Amino acid sequence: MRKYYVARHCTEIDGLTSVDLMWNMYGVTVFSIESTWVRDLSRLKGSYEEITEDLGRWGTKHFGEIRAEVKVTDEDPLSEDEEYALSQQGAKVKIKLPQERIDAAIAFMKIAAKLVIEDEFDRKFLSLKAEESKLEQYLWGAQVREANNLEGETPLLNKIAAAKGQEVSDVAAAVLAGHRSFNEKCVDLYDRMLKLKQKFKDASTIKELNVLWQDYMGIPVPNAQSAEMNLVEDDEYTPLPVTPGLKF
Image 1: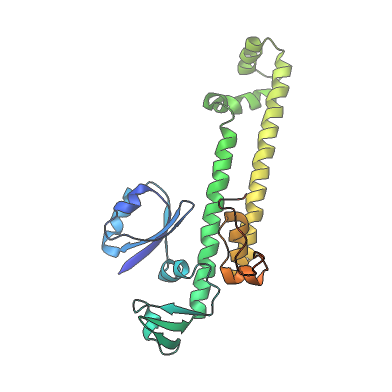
Image 2: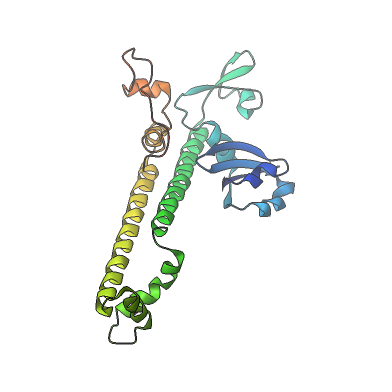
């Protein structure tokens, strides 16, 4: 029996006994391992969580799939299911894609987007924090407390004012202005993250999610969908180029 996981990618995943890497994009990885080797997950340095077999196998397999009929090999359980089989085509069977597979793809596309978005905004936040030294950040809380209570004792602000040759009141005003500016930038990041995650959450079809993945992740929609959306070159067939990479 295999167990399925979605994880932040780390090199230790590759060394897990019996691991099967199934999907990897923007640092988000889906893999499965034999249940007898689950104990080895403690070696992973990144976060991970267990997902269902449907999400792990079929959500990744049918990611972005807009065709109602697909070809499967004999490794797919549906290859021998007469309810969905339409025709035998060489080594593959043409089947009608069941709704449960479509639902798995939709659910996985949302989960993957959520993790990618959160990771990117975490990086943006860390970049924002990196604008000040770690020592400055460590003392920031004390500076703000003293700046909000100038009638009390202000030993830290006194030292800063003496070092800079400024009045304590001026240092306090600068501290509060900087703190307010930082908080406003953090709130802006959080607001942007929430709104973007909500767009993916509100999407109800694979086609809608494909457009979002193209617009924000740089992953092109399938060629057939490009044609439907008239996002093609003059030959009416070749999709317009999509710049790769995150766009938020």
